[in-house]
Structures are given as C-alpha cells and as structure tokens.
Image: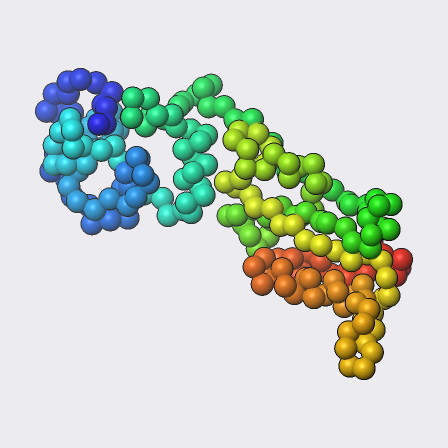
Length: 216
C-alpha cells in the first residue's frame, strides 16, 4: 500500500488518466519499468492507476536504465521499508559506512616467496568494468559483502588470482610433457584465463615476471 504526502488534494492539484507506453516511469517497490495508466500531483508525486486507489496505486519514479546492482545499492543507501512501505530517506539521514577501496603496490611476503605463489586481489568497478581496476590489500577483502562496511559490494567486484613468483623463468618439458611450469608461461596462462571474464586484466597485468627474481 503506497502513501501520499497529503491525505487530501483538490482537483486542481491532480492530473488523472495519464498513460505511458514505457521508458518514462518505473515502480519504486521493485524497480521495474511501468507501462499503463498513471496519475500525478502538484507535489511531484506520481502513482499507478488512472486515479488514486489506496490499495492498488504504487509509487512511480523516473525510469532509469541501470543494472540490478545499482538498484540494490540504491535500496540500501537511500530507502527504508516501514510497515511494508518503501520510503526515501532524505538529507542528513542518508548514512553509509562503506569505504572506497585503496590501491596498493603489493610486495610478496617471505612465506609467499618460499611457497612460490602469492594471491593477488583486484577491485573492479561494476559500472566501469573497462576502465576502473586496481590492486588492493587482502585485508580489504575480509568485509566484502558485509552490509554497510568495507568495499561497497553493489559498486565493485573483487577478483582473486594466483600469481607465480618462484621457480624457472620458462616452462620446462621432458618427453613432450610439461615437467616444470615456468613463472612467465604460468602467469601468462593465468592472465589469459581470468581475462576471459575480466578483459581489463590484460591491460593491468602486462608483466608476467612481476614480483619474481627475473623482474629487471
């Protein structure tokens, strides 16, 4: 059941019987495009149905062609549900404890050097997947997908990849079989595999010798 700002509106403040074919309004309860009759008020409020119906009318907002993640983020940041009625939170009441991810320059630990591999973490911005991507610390991944803290899960995704840093420089084969995977060839395979889903990684990871003794 939707709510209006005022209980009563004179006819001069209402436009009834309007119609949209789409790409104009969307319902606020589920962020779906609306097609059909609607009416609006001098206050700027817009609702479904030819005229006000306490039980059938749903609040409408301007249509936005955005991802599901964007609307999830919008619900979390700007709306609350009170008595099954979604309401926008305005002004100083808008509150979020999300923090922006911080780019770092990784240095492998001695344990990672001894093991020959390190795990690297990259953050990618969902609405700019082709331009925003950089490396972050493992500590920033701990609270990912935790409500209202850490990196905003509705704006970013995190990529976790293995990275070879110790061993031979190139693959070594014996009798036509790969015997010792090399740093360069292994990391090139890793880049190729993960770039199928995140193409920008090919632009970021251009040095397969990075963090190894062959990186000169």
